[in-house]
Image (cartoon, rainbow, N blue to C red; front, top):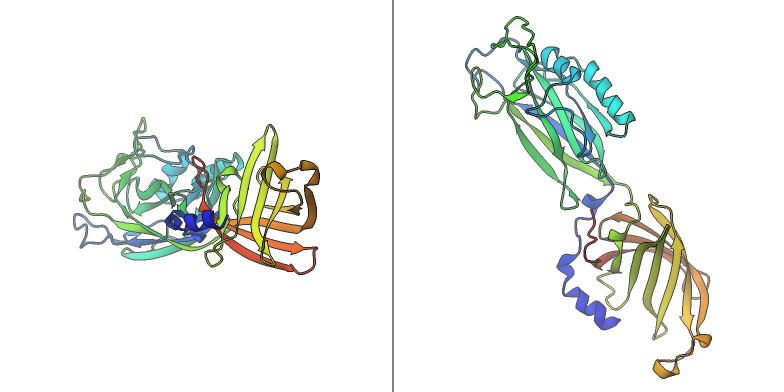
Length: 349
């Protein structure tokens, strides 16, 4: 076992080191930095230029709130034409009720552009996309925003992401200038980027800057968390975890390779769990008796109750283990181990 763990150290670079980013949920701050001004967009720049309140949601890949080339919903139309958030908020709440979205994003606007406004929100790894919009005002039906922006990549939360904002036409009002009178488009046209007057096709109106504030939540038990775990400062011992299922039975099987008074010792445990659970407690048994090879006699195997161990996974590549022994001399402690090797084809999400 010692040589196996020493060899594993040579591939230590494979360990998922971004511990916090791998957590189940994250807290972000998005800052809308508006540059839109008579200097950046001098053509017919309007008096009272501003942006309406931020409105959007976190959701998964199967949900579309708006998309370039698609038709605007009633909520997107109301936001783009008047800055009103109520219709879009109702649509988002309906998506949340149907488990198609998770969190409402609703914040202030920018009363005078240039300017900035920030909004804090929580997002989960199960619905890691952000859609967020704001009306360009005054305008017929123009807005800025992001559609289904992912805040996770390669199984980790992004530390920071900046997205340049170009103008879109919602396709619901045919006015051609900032202060054109209402001219309802019938039938409605597709949402499209505005590449001509009064905007410059290559000059953004500002940007959304997403900053990771914190992460939290243990990962649910699943096969991708299986593998060999150890403490880099204690090379020579470690835990082998198998999280799998047989038929409808989901289980965790643990083997802890360690030592006691100079002799090798291994502890084993197995327990069933319900999918979605994030922690589990195993009864540990100490194996003893019998001999090696031809001397092995299964009747002589002893499995002696040793204690318990609680397992949870704060991040991909990390396990928190709290043990308590019922045998004298071992005591109790909480340790954190790093994954040395995972199971091929079941990398953490």
